Amino acid sequence: MKKYTYPSVLTIAGFDSSGGAGIQADIKTISALGCYATSVLTALPVQNTMGVRKIYPIPMEAVADQIEAVLDDIVPQAIKIGMVHTSLLVETIANTLNKYPKIPIVFDPVMVATSGHRLIEEETIDTIVKKLFPMADVITPNMDEASILAGMDVKTLEDMQAAGKKILRSGCKNILLKGGHQESPTVTSLFFDENGQQYSFETEKFITNNTHGSGCSLSSAIAAYIARGEELLKAVELAQNYVFEAIKQGKDVITGKGNGPLNHFFNPNKLIKK
Image 1 (cartoon, rainbow, N blue to C red):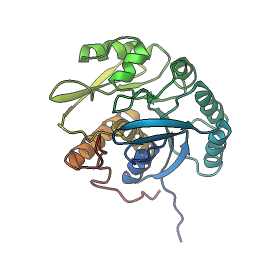
Image 2 (tube, helix red, strand yellow; image 1 turned 180 degrees about the vertical axis):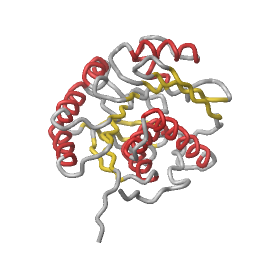
Image 3 (cartoon, rainbow, N blue to C red; image 1 turned 135 degrees about the horizontal axis):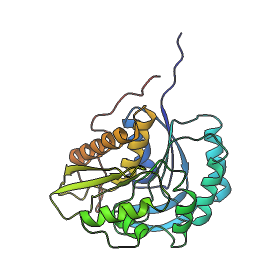
Image 4 (cartoon, helix red, strand yellow; image 1 turned 30 degrees about the horizontal axis):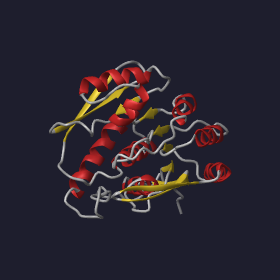
């Protein structure tokens, strides 16, 4: 009898008890795209669709132990890193991952929730830039996060172009700057590669509150497509198509009283056999 494996993705991220964002959105996305999801919990936010109420920390030793337990056993083809809200957490993740052979990393620098709540400590940003940016194959900030990283207002497409170039100089390899917060009938996201090339992706914008976890889902979808063997630019394109459709298929659903989740399972794949 032939033995086989599944393409595997490790998500290192925070919790969402409402199920729409964070590690739950990652697991749903990775699973819907036919990959096997493993996970490491970095923080325990208390939240629902209306916002974050509190964040309980996870002991750093527990974070390192979780990473080692997964990587010693189920080696992923890609890693997604999400919520890292303290400098010590950033250092713990970076130092632990450095013990293992290089695996493609998608880093979503989660700093601001869909509800507008700030999720990161100010002093953590410098540590992220120094420790995680050089390790990540691509980072996926939204416009609010790009504003923080670039130290400038990011309101327009022109602002995004300037901010992307500025962030690229801070030491990251590739950037997908998400345009979901644009005040326009379409959404334009910009991809900046390490060679200075720029690509734009334009999609229709829906009038809906159901975008909770869209950034988490996008970064984990990119990781899933990388795990499936796609080149980075193609993985970015396919992941954006997936999130677009997940928002479209869930835009009229009522889940909770605030910002509802995407429909991650609008067309789920079976686990892919390799």
